[in-house]
Amino acid sequence: MGIRIITDSSADFDLAAAKRRGVGVVPMSIQFGGASFVDGKSITHDLFYRLLQERKENPSTSQPSPADFLRVFEEAKAASEPAVVILLSGALSGTLQSAEVAKEMCGYDPIYIVDSMTATAGIQILVNYACKLRDSGLPAPEIAQAVENIKDKVRIFAVIDTLEYLRRGGRLTGLQAGLGAMARLKPVIAVRDGKVSIVGKALGTGAAVKQLMKLLTEHPVDDAYPSYFLYSDDKSREELLLPKLKGQNMLPLRLHYSSVGPTIGTHIGPGALGIAYMERMD
Image (cartoon, rainbow, N blue to C red; front, side):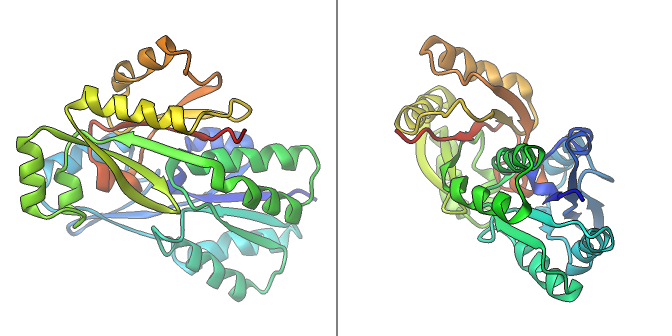
């Protein structure tokens, strides 16, 4: 009997990689005006950012419905396999609630739902950890508890290139965004306590990257876990951060790349860069 590891598409997994690891991905939906897309199936990250810049209306994302989760839970039940379900922060989406409703509908106890309290590649870190524990033979309830025990160590810090998409999403007023654009302000954001917060602002990208590096110094990387360089639409933005980290001997040893998808990309827009990792607790 195997153990199913399930997440949602806000984790921004490469679907081929998820399949190789035996991870099931329940997709979000994205709406641009009257057009609806299924994350990872009918819309790619590249197409999403192109539409985001071309269209005036702000897109919206919809969590999977209970019926979407029920399908995968019924499959686990039919196979008599437990499932560990690691999902987008409950403070950012109703995805967690949909999964809990589906578990009740399914009437199958060995489904263990974990609120990741994070997003994008932060979820990947937890899912990959769960897969490692599964492959080592740990039972499902202990895997879920182990993920619960470490999830507070996940850190995401990022630099946003424009305030426009925070304005569109209602996190800034038009006046605030306009003044910020005039002053060339670049926000530094964090995902913490399950929410996206602005933790700093700087004049220009270079100064914002320095703030991000300061945060990494204050919250050092634990190289026992993989880390991810995050980018929205432009992978070459790595040149603004990674050489500086290398020069300061701060470059994570197990660094991967992950494009930020529609769930968080709706708020940060193109040109963003950042890092997701586990903090070392000395």
